Length: 358
Ligand SMILES: Cc1cc2nc3c(=O)[nH]c(=O)nc-3n(C[C@H](O)[C@H](O)[C@H](O)COP(=O)(O)O)c2cc1C
Image 1 (tube, rainbow, N blue to C red):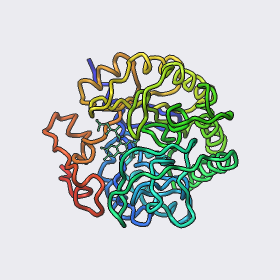
Image 2: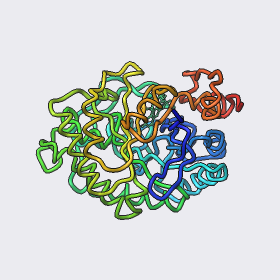
Image 3: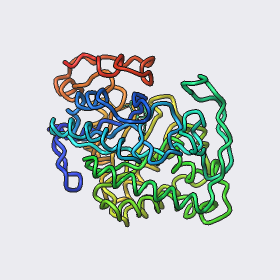
Image 4: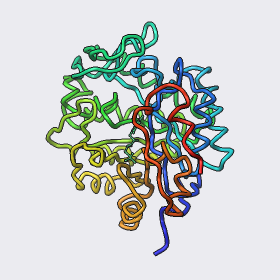
């Protein structure tokens, strides 16, 4: 059977040279939250992918919860990102920016002056998070967002998406997965609001749908995707009754908006809880656009899931860190280098741009 993985794919109006997507990965190299030359080099090295999705990038000063993650809410950041998009386009690849608002997964020391740790409800995460100034610190209890803050946060996504287009991105992925702000609204264990944004599945998905609608209105739905992680446990996301129903509804609502894709994360290969296959099938059934699948993929599993039409594109994460030319290596069945976890989030070029290129 001929390979689907290495074949072209039309994602909206862009033609991808293969169906391998570089998964979004936070690498914490953006000093002062501004994309820089080594980031342009890093993404350029990985342009064998049909589509690159950047590391989580904050649309707001309030969403910069981790040390050294990039932002995309001012002109300096947009200028920095332009170097990245130019580098990737010069290699014939395409690139979406992942907009990640960290919400309560944050610490004031990681935020600029005047920014706030905001979330749907005032429920803090357990455990500690890294700060460059004082190393590990307990997560704070976030402030419950007012209705005005919800509105202004949605506007921040819209502003950021417009800047993304100016910075040369082919599109935007909303980070609705892994326990960040959008999933904090979706999951009732983090969202105990009694207004229109909490309670029923309709209310809990409202923030995601409103952000998607406004961003789609601003830049076009064919430039917009969303990442989701039903059953994911990252950042204190606990299981709840009605997960299938919630995500089927979300898929239906986003389908009505004609979004380009839904990107489904399954981190069970990384030790996270098993994801009920029914929820993936329900998203597929209820969403007419492209489906990207992610989590622990090798070539065999990727080909099988593509042939079985469970998804249209396959995102790969860790292997791209340590194998910049991953697509060629997979195609030729060459030996892969394993990534060094110690340099996942450390500053500088080590473990970032210095993996062997061939
Ligand atoms: C170092 C690292 C950083 C990550 N950062 C993000 C991120 O910013 N946004 C996101 O959606 N997922 C993030 N992920 C999850 C990956 O996108 C991917 O889903 C995960 O690594 C599983 O795919 P894999 O088995 O191919 O590595 C990260 C993973 C790693 C290893």
